[in-house]
Image (cartoon, rainbow, N blue to C red; front, side):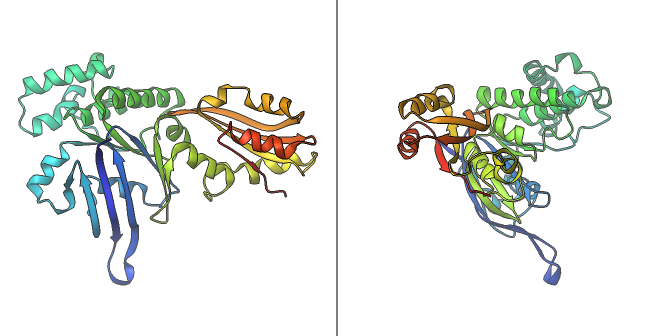
Length: 337
């Protein structure tokens, strides 16, 4: 797939001399066109600062940003303005003009670029219909719900036909039902327009629902970069520290307190095998008894993710484990407390 954006050895700092503070420390990664990429981490990790470097709202101290084959970090102001037309931004607090109507807010980037109101409003009408805003075009932001305001902000980012849209905490102020609708909208836009999204979020459901891959920032560095399901496996194992639910530390001790601690395993399922009775079939083959201590199946964007903690009894445990490895993402013995 075609590369859409690449960060090369990005460094960003604030302040000078003894007051200089490193915000981003040699960041490297690349994204293919059409991906949805999540950036997560604790508060102060540098998530929003990184997001703002992708269109140079934050100018890095050193390193490169290559967007659609063009190194934008070396462009003059005139050329950078042209590039920014292909990078939409949806800010955390929406940043709508309170004195402008919905149609005026969405059309603003086009009118600013010299498009006539007639042509701009015509394009807004098409975008508004797609995003379910046709009945609100003459309303003002103060008359809109949080979800409607977010849709207006997304429509404004989409109006210039961007190749990349940056989302900063897109659901942080929304209720669960509205959050689900906004995430579905992002997925629809991604599929329909092949727009790449980079999403900063602290909400794990956002990552699970829409992201193809994820970067975990820690103290300005990338501590993890990879697929969404691999990220959550590391979170559960405790390999990603101080973030999310660590099964072994928070759930397992209570679960196994009254059970035999010698044969307890974590089994991870990914994709189609979450729907198959592979655990039951393998256990039956080797005359193994299984006690499920913990289990869940979640729907991620790219497939179903299942996690089980099981107690195993029987004489053929080693053979059972080796056979099961061929049918599941992973099976590993758990650390005993």
